[in-house]
Image (cartoon, rainbow, N blue to C red):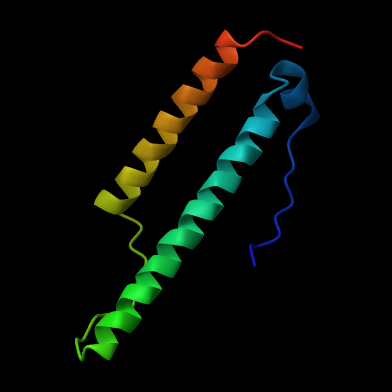
Length: 92
């Protein structure tokens, strides 16, 4: 089950950039799905290692270093692609 999230944005944001609130929500939704998959895969790997008698540390989030930087780079890449696609598609 995915977490419930209230997606709020200021009224002037929608007026200044009509597609931005929906794009931000889509980016969050994409991240939630990817994070869920990563956690699930990590959990399966730890259980498999334990079944083989290997001692694997439980997951501890590290909010610095390479993992965070890779996530930021992934988001920035996604954002650039989304903005390029939006610029190329005709407005409704």
